[in-house]
Length: 396
Ligand SMILES: *Cc1c(COP(=O)(O)O)cnc(C)c1O
Picture (cartoon, rainbow, N blue to C red):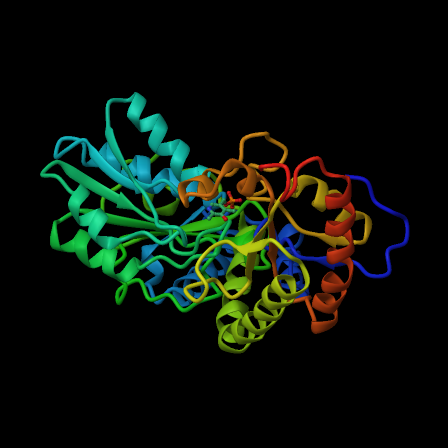
């Protein structure tokens, strides 16, 4: 993307794509790159030191979601955790049944994994959502068959921010003896999670979405749930995920989880206030804009709007020149010409879906940042609309 040399301010509003590593997290990691470099499987003091650091991190990750440390597996990130949960359960329970349930609005790490399993002979039901991106637990119940072995429904939707009724879906799954996985990458550290209270069997978290380093994540696997490993090799991670542990990454992830938990109540309220100020400001200042996602059952850091008669991409380029980072749809869909599968599942027209903009807030953002966006965005939209062949009069 092009950058103007000197925008008045730099405002990063793409925290659902990734976040910076917190200074405390970086400080915790640094010794494990150099002095404390041991292999956690080794039987000497270097090895014990690394093992101890991994154990501490496992406790911190478990605590964020109210799990036991021995229910946490470290992986290379959210994508691998989703893959391990879904393929691991499908492969371990295939003698029991071949039917799987997910939704139309999952992250590609989930969606594409289910599509790959369809090619292996599994049958998958993709349940729809309503116009707010909300999934109806009754649709899940109706989709369950005798041969259903797994349900995977995300917690906080990454594009539009809608928070799904995970506890109810988990209760339905349990009642029918079906395992339940949730991708909680966007909700972890933002809204409280209690895996037992919410009837969750498997849950995905990623470090780099909560101010930890990239390339590390975790899968919560409830005690007693069997998985077929997807990465084979050594006996690491209770033989469920082979490979020498990424000790600095795991240490940083643990510290990020500890800090996220400590800050959660206050920081979530602060973000929700900024979110509401940004949503209200955009709706007040720009005509023909609609809010995407649920008005109240919403992640505290997510704002998603469609600016009618425009392409989200052209607004993004102009915002970048003014120092503002946002995204259209999800980072993975940006750059492709296909509109977001999530917005289409919510029933938006192709035109409205193409005009979507996502702002995701984080720790660095202030009221002044929101004021700045509300100052620079309306003239950008006005300028682009004045040049656009589309418009209220064009029939589009
Ligand atoms: C970012 C994200 C992922 C992927 O996590 P990585 O650690 O980047 O592999 C999965 N699911 C959701 C909802 C995400 O936002």
